[in-house]
Length: 306
Ligand code: NAD
Image (tube, rainbow, N blue to C red; front, side, top):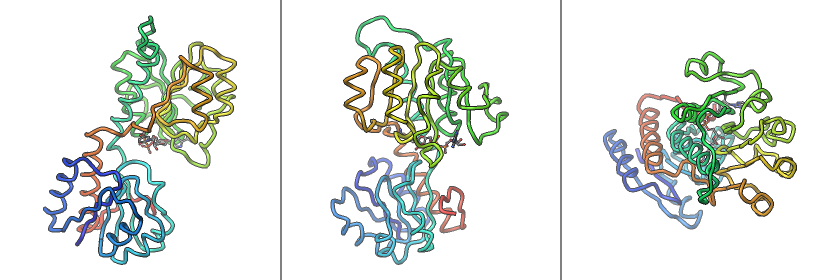
């Protein structure tokens, strides 16, 4: 069996070494295509691959057509919108992601950005503290749970709302579970966003939801930019000079945010929530283990194209 790592932005060497160890211990062969510049290189490399590990690499119908021996694609990471799931299903290819492997990295960034913001972007002036503030976690999934754990260490009062996670699961972590997003935003001065971008959530973080946040409100987005209604957020921030927006996913209207809201707006230059050595290694090795489990035992846990 040939397992291909196809990454235009390569894994760290230590992650590749870890993946190789898992693959070779299972008796499989590892092939590497890194920093490719042309799609033709990918089409050629997948020809005889039985499994592929990717990062943000695009796996579309053309790649799947070329990969005649392919059984499984694993996206080392949480989001898998770079894989054409319908085409994969039509080709009989299993697609998986590696949920949870980068959650701590994203959560640490969310808390780090909160500290940065309440300390006035480290500009030397007097700021405020997070201790005692009410933090609302919007979606209590893998990242949300890690944010709760760290925020409790900061002494924050932690609340959460999740449309699908049962309240008792949230409350056993010592987090107060609320019944609606509206209630969460009304209650909490700081809200950390962790919803996925779906048909239902796109544009859902809007004026009506944000306007009732308490004085000194701050919205922290490490989820996706598509969930924000940017036009309405700009309108709200024009009206509320106490409102801060801090994001790891640069808005389409970044220039307008930066110009209008200096001192209460910050975006990372490039999405970097999951960009840590640890997340890189964890996700790569998890991908290798999932491939071995699938090929040897038919294990389909983490399959996303059911
Ligand atoms: P997850 O799948 O573990 O959790 C998502 C949670 O959202 C689930 O608990 C689900 O029940 C909940 N949910 C879904 N729809 C909802 C809705 N309409 N209202 C309320 N809750 C809803 O995902 P995760 O790993 O925690 O990731 C969360 C988000 O962070 C995703 O959008 C992901 O793409 C993003 N992310 C960003 C980075 C980054 O680099 N900044 C890295 C990883 C993940």
